[in-house]
Length: 113
Length: 114
Image (cartoon, rainbow over all chains, first blue to last red; front, side):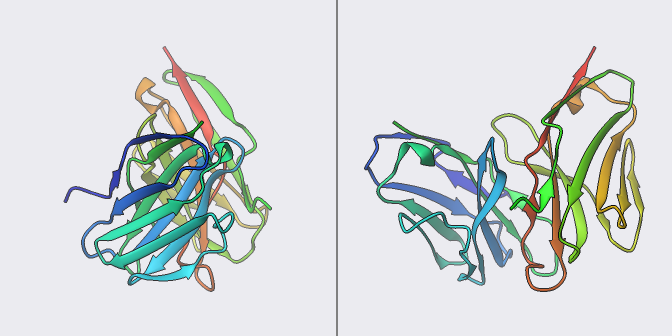
């Protein structure tokens, strides 16, 4: 299995632009998680899905952030409009039902200038 | 509010010595704990875990200890090797309510020196 695949690996954008991050979970994993890594807060959960349905989005910082999972093999995290404080590494992770640990993707490093 | 805390941002240890990384938690509903290791430009990878019904779990050079009364866990690496240099994240989950999600600490950067 290729693992959790995220794209792009790096994204540099100007403030105010729309940014879309993409994730392909491991086949058969029915939970998908989006995390953001910052120095101050470590890895913080933004949102997670079970069987493509959003379960908990309480970590989404504000309305500028949205996430979708149109099918079992694809999810997007969108920021519109982006701001410099959104600069961070964004990770996607997945796991099968019943497991307690996740498999993470390699992350997307977002820089908003 | 940080429910999982790693109070040491960094730790430096000599090769061959023991590395001890610490983690504290505040939520008494947490019953499963994990350690992840992260190299630069890579995603975190699972290292070792422990259930709250145990107080110790060992896997090769890595041992995790859990003190439920103190709400404290630690990761011991013996002997430490240069390849162990990475950021280590402590994570916790509960079997009820938020049992499906992991809450992470802020990480500890371990540097193993020759």
